[in-house]
Length: 386
Image 1 (cartoon, rainbow, N blue to C red):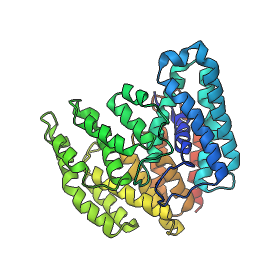
Image 2: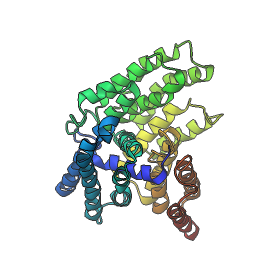
Image 3: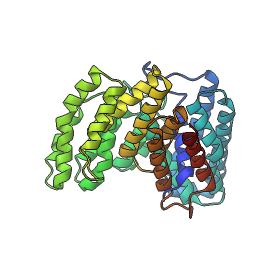
Image 4: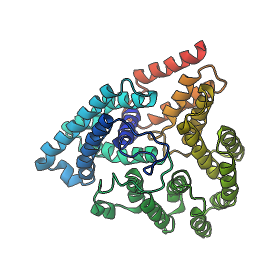
């Protein structure tokens, strides 16, 4: 079930769980550490997740009356600290304010549905946090796995998960090296190739955007391309990634700036003959790495930064995991707010509107909530008034 804004707000929670405790490069990269107070709040949020996420993975435990008080208290702890965070970040940067407001508005959803004894939905929402953590934690380079989140989930929990779930949880807890091993095992497994499309994307994102390693994926991709059960177009796509990666690395290293990312995305879009084509995936992943690095460096003017957010939003809409767990809406909104009069603002709005509507497909809502319509109208007004 796709849960629209409520699950996207929970995505924020996943992002915030470790934002103050190592999100980005643990080894002294460009991520800016937050104030001590913010880190303390984050640790409280992380503590709430640590007490509830493992329980949600065990249906009997999650429903057990003897566990109910402890789980309810942990969920209340989680929601309360989200509100503290909202108040604490009122003077912080725009992205942090956006994330904190979303937490304050929606983090109580899990607490509420659990209190209503809607255990399946509550467990579902909590487990989806891992996907949202993936969105956050695979954004920036990381030379080594996080020491701070080690032990967040016991090894026995990992061992009980299937390979796809295990890889997601390893990425969510910043155990990138382990995640790559798991993804390689999954890609080499006899699972139907249609089930490999998401893992293959995750694998390239972690190898290239997180680890900066263009060589590691090549042997795995070659072995996958040799499978006898691939349909012809998928084999061609994978072979294209193999062929493009060396040249893409050279271009990214020679000029890791907005013009290179813009050119890679233009080339990637021209390669797409059909909506399901994936031969441009390597171009999009490399472009996303360049764009995220440029944004994080903070050396561009407002309109260049807005364009970088717009292009990154296009990229995430293309390679993101799905419509209801994606950073694309925030990226596109940010591009509009930074430069509502730019040529790309109207296209950013059109894609944002599409992503918003698609995020509610199959949800509990019969139509797009009024607050979403008002939000879109506000952004449309910024563009029209620019």
